[in-house]
Amino acid sequence: MLDRFLRVWLGSWPSPGGLAVVGSPLRDKPRWDGGEQRALGVTDGAGNGVLSVPPAARDAVAALVARTAPGDLEAVLAERLPALVGRPEQHFFTGVFRWSDAPADLPDEGAWEPSDGPGLPEWLRPFPGEVLVARAPGTGEYLAGVGLKPHDPTGIEISVGTTEAARGRGLARRLVARAARRIAGAGAVPIYLHDPANTASAHVAVASGFPDLGWKVHALAGAA
Image (tube, rainbow, N blue to C red; front, side, top):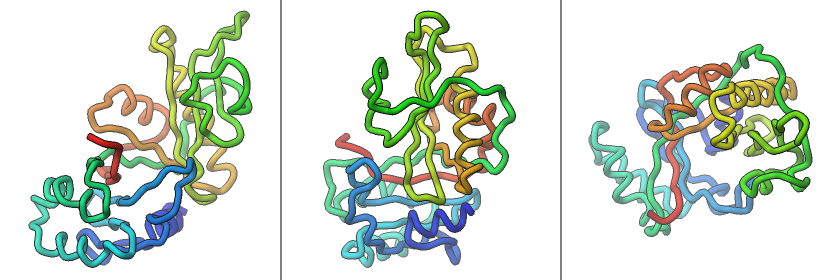
């Protein structure tokens, strides 16, 4: 299922070796939230993977990759890729790419609520359909939540956030595990991405069944 999702998300998978550059029409189209993703890549623990860019930029990016030593590639892409795909104001980001084929069997946490319902933080509202929310017993105060990014029916990314006052209770890991079980039960692969420096997010991922296998995600982010 992961291979199928990556073929759809990136336009090709797996790599024949090294970093393969492909031109995908999806890079010229809005993503799930209406935003854009002009460059998107995934590499495995051996550094093999696929970098997806707009078809018009494919040859220039492929030439850059071909003439760059593997050890220098990430730095060179960070410097040159944004301009090559027409977004010089953005910056190249490399994060941890995780997936789960065995979400943790933790107790259910929270309840599914419509993302346009009352008492939710603004970051949860763009997610389509339902979000998973933990609230304080008695008061109903929002404590933590999960939103699902429907990149494709075969792959759904999980985003989680916890209020500062509610941290340290294990809410995030139980919410993520419950969301992952729902995704897997629907026949899709649960995806979890995070900044390498975010150790709290890494702990949540491991506890909820998302191991770090050395895979990375590469993408453009907003203006630096």
